[in-house]
Image 1 (cartoon, rainbow, N blue to C red):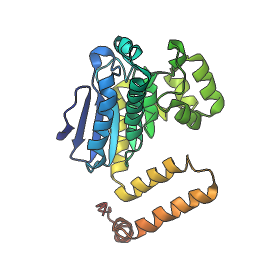
Image 2: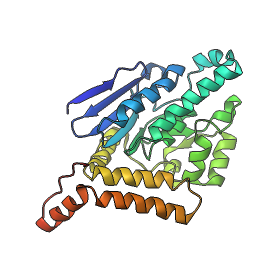
Image 3: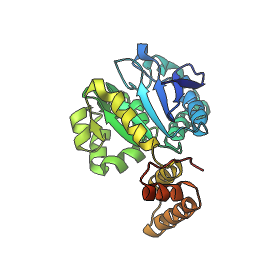
Length: 271
């Protein structure tokens, strides 16, 4: 299937296919897809290119056979240590902003995880809406093992909401590695699939999402994300009511009803 490159980057590959499925590849296979200062800035550039691309779903993957993303490249640690406080804060804000931009994309993001997803690599996987894992997947907070905290790149927020405080605390305090089977059992990943089928499974899931109303999917993601952050049931209902009211004014809902009555697949346009 023909794919076009949305933006030329050094550490990431960003492509959009004709079927509306985009693929974002962490592209440093010779360094286990480890993160660099450049990569954190490029997450922002990739998200900006993807946001208005017309994509209906995104697959997030690591290049090569070795790793999804092995965290920050230790070869750049010296550069960070030499930074002053204000310079480091700028770097930190760029890093967190890049991952937040991926999480905030208006369409679903599916992470296809093989091999290590460690430290910042785990944070990247947590920025996705759905996580599929190969049996080789190894997930770890790892931060405490290098003298840092789990309060990094959104991990403390996303991990507790995904697997609960107790499990997140254990992983955050120990930095231990979680294998694919345990990750599935505790809800850290949605499911485990054979390594050779990992991308195909992510592709099938993305295609199923892309077949639905773009507006309906986008409003669903917005409601799911925002309602993790609101503090009351009433506020959640207000957000849902606004979204549904807008969608009933769009073209896709009546089209779906007509298609059902006529016994044909709907032709969703997103208008």
